[in-house]
Amino acid sequence: MLSAYMIQPAGVMRRHIDCIPDTGGVYAFLLDDPDALTPALDRARLKLDSLRLGRRAILYLGASGGSLRRRVKAHLSNDTGRSTFRMSLGAVLAEQLDLRVVPNPHVSYFWFEPDGELRLSAWIAANVSVAVRASAEAMVEEKSLIADEKPLLNITGRRRQPSAETLMVMRREMRGLPLDPKTLN
Image (tube, rainbow, N blue to C red; front, side):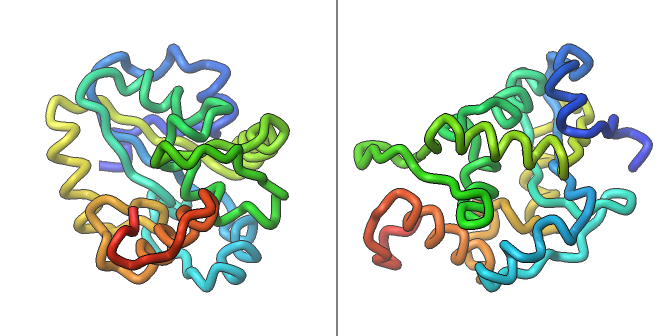
């Protein structure tokens, strides 16, 4: 199974995005060095799961039924509003990277000020690898992988996990929204 994935550092994938299949597929964002995220996780009272792809910790799993290339490119862009992975990671790293949200109470997503987007992208390029694999059953595989593996930064498919609830609270705080448990998203 591991050999079926193409794994490259995020910075390499971003520069060579055309090497990613323009078909449906699954992808994972992998933390190359767990120590890089430890201080931020400790502040958030989160724990990195032991889930691994090779020797790297899996932070986030996703899929695209259409273009795997386009989906991964959105995650690797300097636009957090296009990426649930970047929103969750940015919420965890906000203090460490001095990330400031551009306020917009009318949307359920957020993005950071331009210099913060660049700092987050640089952190991802320095600390994260991307694994991709074409798959005709990508959406089914994604749901199954998230349910089985419960990667730290995924929320969908893990809403009752304490770490997912913590991430939802952190993301709401980033947006300046009240922390009413009935409205967490």
